[in-house]
Length: 212
Image (cartoon, rainbow, N blue to C red; front, side, top):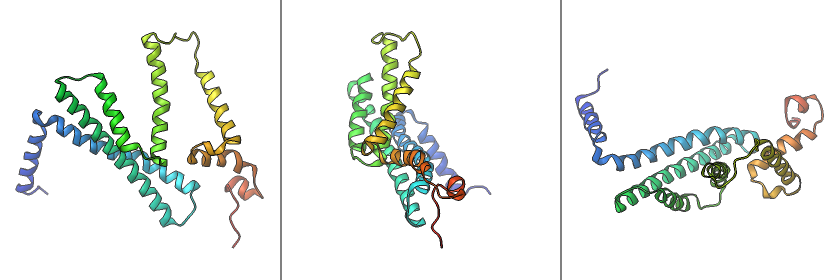
């Protein structure tokens, strides 16, 4: 069924506006907000669904509410950050007449403080995810720029050895220092596997179900 003439006219006008170069910077900021919201929801919803039903107790309504809340928080925070970052980069370029590398750093710092400064589970997970990748990237950049000598052998085996040794030591002896979701995952893997009563909670279920 063909769209009404008024709707077709509106779509043509909107598409004409979107193609105007003079509005490109402002529209890029708006689309950044849109992409941040969509990407945040895509990333968080499946993760929250799995983690909630695996490790969270409570009614179905409480679990669904937790999933929606986590998804909304991640989605809205990422959308606001992308909007803020792109707007600040555009503003700096406009004021100075050109783009500099420091613009990205300053815009990221300000946006990160404004959006992700609250110490909650969602922001903590996002920041730790970024930290690991930033450290990897800085090491590679240091080698690329000549600040760090290029290894004569692959350092990844040493890296993975230390990571797994440290995380298990922290879990066993300093557990409260680890993030709650990591504690839950490791409890499931390393502690729950020490307990069973019969074949049902040895192979089928993680924990025996209460008798009716």
